[in-house]
Image (tube, rainbow, N blue to C red; front, side, top):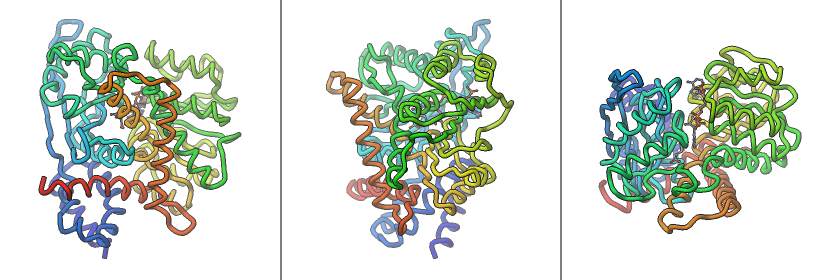
Length: 446
Ligand code: NDP
Ligand code: 2IT
């Protein structure tokens, strides 16, 4: 019964949003859990909550012209998807990457609605970005692009309306240029962006939050099974913001991390990445903006061109690069090699077929909207600090982050327990849905 309802629903989604494959996948993954729940709770069905929640409240698309270092005109496309504001201002990152298109940003905005709801904080869901590629651009070019991007975006955002942050290709440097231009255009200093520098309104622990939070979440999943990180071998993909702080926290908790990657290849360090080697990665990636291959050259470990880490034996895997990086055969290999936990630092890094493999094997699968919610959660804490004009200590923010990840795990247990197994994907989807759906019911036809 639910299956045919789902097929019918997905047919309409595909017809109405042609060519948006990632958005279709994200909706399918959520409705697989939510349709059976709605069948048992007809108030949501009657109010057509599902039909409304998949439709963005607003989509903004705009031209971003800028001058490169050779004084040539460049033109990119900018976007902001304002998906759902039933429980708070739109909140979600900006992605700058050549693959960015409407379907990818709609998938990310859709996921963000459920993720933000799970954080326990009052934040709606949004996402934005551009097909601009910061790779190989000078600081001056990145600044010119950011200023032009904000020159249109500023009229659509605000500290109580929509609060963007970083994502792939948008880190501290980009947030700085974007914030500078917003301040100049609006003549006001407010918490309109998160991920800001520490001496101009940023929060301690925000750079670390997504990685730390993901490790805290997997720690809870392991604890529930009577396990810990001590002595566990872990593989991590990517080498950007999320990957870096995932590795840092894993090292602190006694795990051995053996991989990192970027869009060119994979390093496999059998000795394990220690704090000193990680400091090298941070300098390589955040300051020199180089390739991960240099790590293999410096430390004499293995390097594989264009490879992902999923063929390497591990107890826990942390996909922290991009969507659809774990396919069905990768999931099978991970399970075959004895992997017992997956923490999704990235958004939707496992395909629907891959997720099925993890569920069938009954391993601890922590879906992105739960496992990587620590980043946006600390963004929410940054907004609170900005509103109150205070700065909390590292310890205070880290403690709050820890509590939030624990609370998300509890919500997953509440809605996802199936006998002695926990279906975290189902738990996160229903847990995230209920709060937003109830707010939509309370607020009438909006
Ligand atoms: P960064 O830009 O800091 O790092 C991204 C990393 O992933 C880089 O190592 C990059 O390699 C690699 N990568 C990106 N796209 C591809 C691709 N198409 N193929 C191969 N490698 C790729 O981004 P973040 O660390 O911030 O984001 C990583 C993931 O985490 C994304 O899915 C993001 O949506 C998600 N996320 C981020 C949060 C945050 O707070 N930053 C919060 C929650 C989720 P290269 O440098 O070669 O491009
Ligand atoms: O995917 C995500 O949750 C983010 N990129 C962080 C969003 C935010 O507003 O901090």
